[in-house]
Every structure is written in C-alpha cells, then in structure tokens.
Image 1 (cartoon, rainbow, N blue to C red):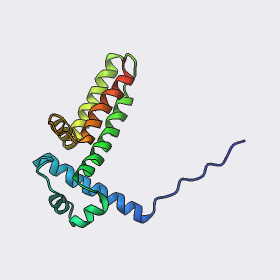
Image 2: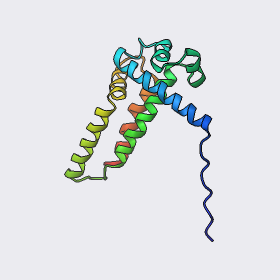
Image 3: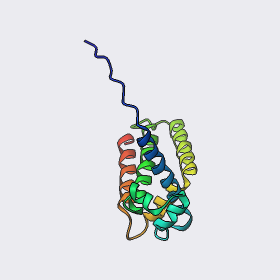
Image 4: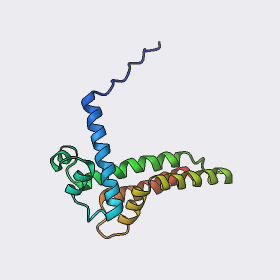
Length: 146
C-alpha cells in the first residue's frame, strides 16, 4: 500500500532570517580570513564587515573557530559532491578531464575557502575544521577511485 508523502515543513520566517544572518556572517568572515588571515581576524572585524554588532555574532556563533567550521563544512559538502561526480573505480580520460575542469571551477569560484583551508592546513596549530576537511576529501576520493 502506497503512503501519501507528508510534505516537508516549510521553514519559519525566523529560521530563514537566522540562516540568512549566519550565511552573511560567514561570507564576511570568509573574505576577512582570506584577505588578512584567520589568526589576525577578530570577532569585532567580522561584525563590522557583516554590518552587525559583536553581540549579534555571539547569538549565531560561539567564536571565530565555529565560523571557520561552518565555512569548512559548507566547502566540504561542495567538494564531496564534486567527488561523487567522478565515475569509479576506473574513470575514463574524458571523465577525468571533465572532473578536473569542474574542480578548477570550484576552487576558482571558492578561492577564499580553498586558500584558507590550504593555508591553515600547513601550520602547527591547525583548527579542527581544517583537519576534518583534509581528512574527509581524500577519503571521499579514495572511495570513488581505486
């Protein structure tokens, strides 16, 4: 017997506003992290760049590490979706070429997170969000290609 699918609940206006504010804060932070470095960027600078107050930032994120985590998680999702496009276990050359072109396009479009993850990944005090990205991407790629 077929069940009638229950429509997914639409997000409330408050939830949509919260998600918009979080995205706006992350975009501002991403640009600051990229332009002046993660360590040099302060919560006050992020608030100013996002056009809000520091107290508003605290209502969305505990600290800049949590903002970085949100940025890295979103980037990881896009990277893993790209990995899923690669046919495995042994892709043909045209598939590899198309995948590389898509990867270059993603990194060019997402230059700030790409540069940030690469730059923070070489230090001794690498944030957990960056470590997870550097572990997750190769695992996803390894699962698709022998």
